[in-house]
Image 1 (cartoon, rainbow, N blue to C red):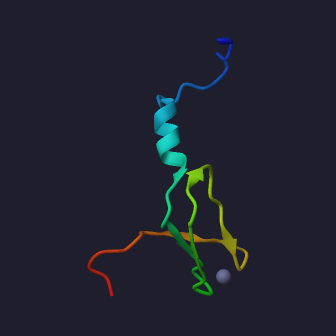
Image 2: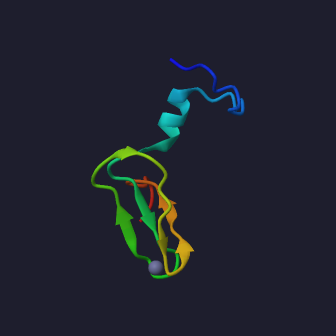
Length: 69
Ligand SMILES: [Zn+2]
């Protein structure tokens, strides 16, 4: 409706690009590089995941990594 949002910076990203980038998928996992704690998503959603453990940001782990272990 209101189209007066011209102050928004032009990033070239469409809404669906943002949505895809911010979608948190079930099964996605994050790992603490220090204590090896693992966090896995059991309910999906859209948002920003900023998990921290041991005072450091956790690193994203690829689900079901192929050819590993
Ligand atoms: Zn930790």
